[in-house]
Image 1 (cartoon, one colour):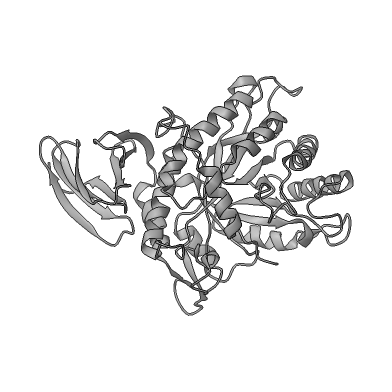
Image 2 (tube, rainbow, N blue to C red):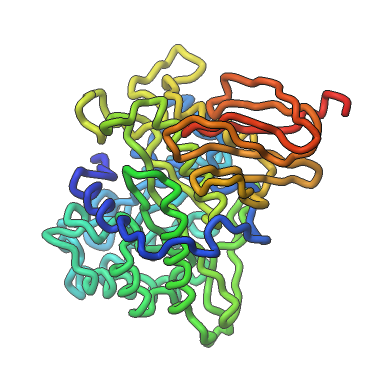
Length: 456
């Protein structure tokens, strides 16, 4: 199967221009806990580009703490003869995912030479919807989330140029077909490159929130990931403005993303204005070959990205992507991965981890079972001190967006604390006085927990 290039220079610059809107700042809902949020680890996901993993590959993905895998579900690869579908490659992938209790987020994409690319005629749209329903029926009740296309707002994926009206007609056709034929399967969209408010609002005005369980966006940027928080807030208010307020004939608004358990993402329904439509960060990463970003900085940005999402009510965060797409040091597209490109059949870890892989695993292991509780005010808006809580304990992630390393004081009460760097390679002990714990923060997050082994 031809690999999907998740990001080109063109879409990078488009994402940056779309995300550059900073007029909606200081949103009161940013960095604010949701009482119904899940524990930190439930929503971690990663993009892949294969249906047949190498031996040991899925084990590495699961060991890093991922619960979700996002993958193209390609129309032209599964319908090579009109009306005849072959999902066998995805059967094999699902078998591999099930072995490690990983959930699938499949992207219904792209065109098909049998019908046209993209599907813009009524005949092609009906064929696309028939294929999508057949796929959803084939994998029904397997916990799959289906995403309606990928980045339809960029020319690479909607040639020769994006057309939101064409996308809306296709998405409505698929949404109606899902409601009639597979009403309990989850459909999301539109997977825009960047948080493209104009494209998104057009989709919402057309009624697509009637059919979607969540809104997916790709918040790529080369700036600080924390900037996404206010954009999420603005998007959430836009969703609230357009979300369905009237019950359907069945008495509900259809399937929605419910609680994320250890083994499943359950379907729940809610009626009328009570239905919550969450935002999913469906694809987002930083290339370690971008100017000014090396592998070490990539790992820090990954950590900050995932923490930003977890503390801004984003239930699923998909990192782009799993392994390096190539070895060309001058090609940024080759270096979004968490692991290097070469397969190492004789190693316990079959791909060489980058620092970003270690950062993911450390983040997962440190905050597993914890929920976001609050962001502490420590003086500067550039300083981030996030508190996560379990029933009996609290843990902290701290960093700054300032380029100046400096010290901050955190009110934790007296005691001994352990500090761990974001890749888990260094842990130190530090004592707090009666008033506060003083720590040094940089652009690379550190984690703090109380040392319960030391008598207080």
